[in-house]
Length: 298
Image (cartoon, rainbow, N blue to C red):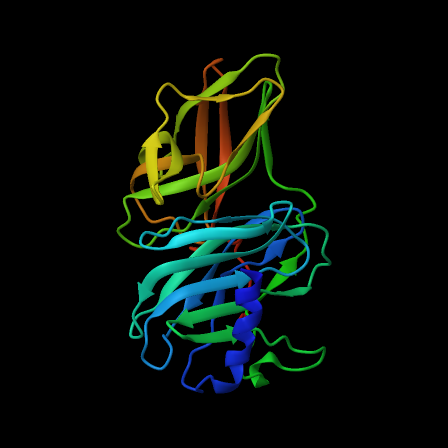
């Protein structure tokens, strides 16, 4: 895979100016945390369909997980403790269409404000284009012919929101904004159990939805499947469970209004030991990032 990535750089000189840049959606990254990103491919190669997209990671990425993409073979490569990148191959994205290739990454120690580059190779049959140029300090990346997509490292929150009742603690709950007319929404958080026995999360309630359910998400035959967790989800004694995109999540069924970025709403969770815990859930953007001033990214 690395041989393929290096060989593709030779195609840069022949890349027509009509090609759209590869764009990195999502971010910012936060040191020590996981974020959802996606590579957006806007055009093929001089009319030809895209059949492979390969993103390579900068130093400092400590974990990565691609999202299943129907019709494509997805492969993470490199050391799992220091992943080198992800490749989507075997699909077909026509020149006239665009699509996103999503994944999650975590970064270790990195200074806030650091720009991390994620070089991308786009392949269309025998043609390969490498979006891999990295601007030197003080150089405007817009002046580059084939700039690598970048994302900014943000400062970690010094005091993440935390809600406790009895032995249970819910840290940094959030929901993703929903488009008008959407019937469901998702809430994510970390739930910790400080007791000596398992406690099940059984459900909840909110004025924003008619039902609150606990759902899991899994990948079967390269297809993501979602299902309700019957009987509640155990929070292990002395442990914690992460509710995050692509995994366990709290599903809001029958939304009575859209979840709007920047707003917040109450959510009460119920547990098998009769504990109830009411949270204030902030709504993040459609990409899952906290509300922040708009910032242009490649």
